[in-house]
Length: 571
Image (cartoon, rainbow, N blue to C red; front, side, top):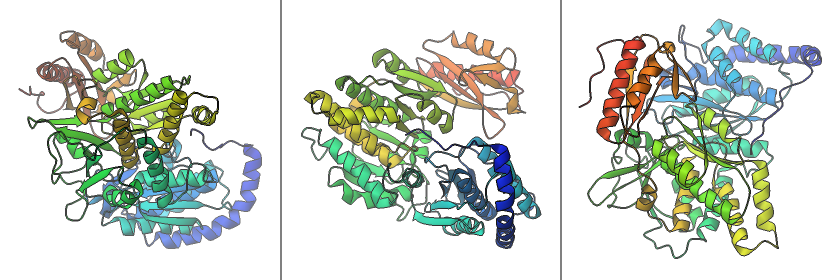
């Protein structure tokens, strides 16, 4: 499912053609933009940055941004001659925030250059908006007479209605066609955009089409589960009081009782992401408020826009066990590796991790499963990109955001084997399982609903309990700390953020500290958003991990310009 849109062309010819056909169109459209824009004025002096999560801040400051992202999406659509998506959400942020993300033609995140344009357009003062637009149109040589098609979706926040309307206004101001999907999860909108631009090859660009594709694949997969009891089919879901809860309800009828769901935090009374949701569970290391589960039962939590999922259970001693993105990636890649072996398919499978992945998971994958492990910089973009380099690429961030990518060649080989009349039964069964896996997973982006269905199918097929899954490997104890510094840019890293190149002496200090502990590892990296340096340490015992993290924090404080008091020891 890799692939993109060509953006090259004969520059001089394009420029000439662009001159004539664009001028008249632009004049008329710009008058409309000017008129509409005055209804969505920018507060003077407000500056926001488009990051990995798009724009995200208090909803009061976003009206002008939404209108302008409608404009930008229309330009991106004219440029790529494809449908573009705009999602209004702030994911796991509190209820009073909101945000917006653009979705490129294959359902992937918008390119780096266009992230820059988003920031430029968002921050142009009211009187400079047309100049900023013209600048983008000229730089990209966009033919303004091309039509624009934009899909818009929103989450359940109270501010999402008026903000998504502002996006729709922006698209219309440039004469674009718009389709308002209303309430959808973020991954559903990514899916719709991809279906539309592959002319239905990836699926049908409707909500029903999404449920049909995923649930049919899930039902086909679970047919391979021998004698699953009703107990084993039961799952408790924490919907984070968000959009994911609504959509799980819509999907239930499609599952034909193959999965028995108890839904908690369904939005009927609680506040979005408040003491619930994947982020809360991961950070607090405890079950969400409002969920009732017996010891040993499986539970999972979505985040606010349902693009991440984490699993957990409580044991008979009342001890909480979290199964995060590392554990999920391990379960999925082990399952796929076994199927490839059974199918005798020579396909390269890799797990893409960041430096934050627990050392135990890396060791298990490399040494026991003999799976390639690739480490990249933090951020979904980097993971997704690296996963595209393999026949099958599995990636999950520890926070539970991730998916599986199959190359076109891999899908082709799997299909051929599934259809091959002379293949023996075992190979064929494995190929059919692989084929259904490609359909149950949302390959455009991390998707809590789709990931959950795949995990549930794997546990059923393998006849595995959550405790057995958890026991595949034991996490090394670890600790994450933050050190406030004057300027985070003094820290520069290499080797997928695992080694510090500057300031001088820091990496040597870390190396000598790590040598003092068993099974230890530590790295530091600048935060992407604030002047702090993030410190990660793991070691054989929790005490060692805590001590190592503290000592590395001190080294950062002394060598990288720490501010405030020296970091204090945790004990």
